[in-house]
Length: 80
Image (cartoon, rainbow, N blue to C red; front, side, top):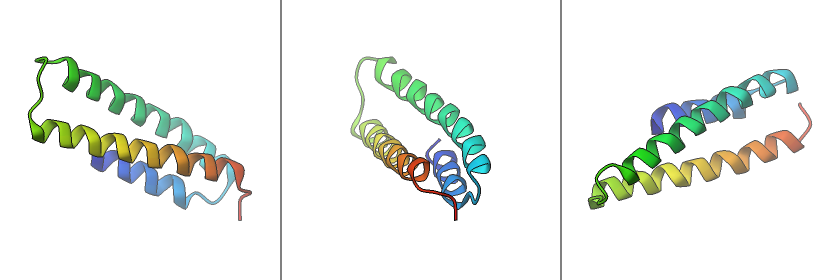
């Protein structure tokens, strides 16, 4: 999941036109929603998480926060 989120982030940052960026943002939101769903399943699954699962969850949360910040920058900056 982290890999697909990273790939989506890279595509969005490489978008050249506002239209291309908008299409990728829609796809990006879907990827993030899937990630949130997966994190909810990790958290609610057995009631306890080992250190490895917690670390993965934190990595995913950090990546999602970075993607949201980059998305706002992409949305507010004009296309080159």
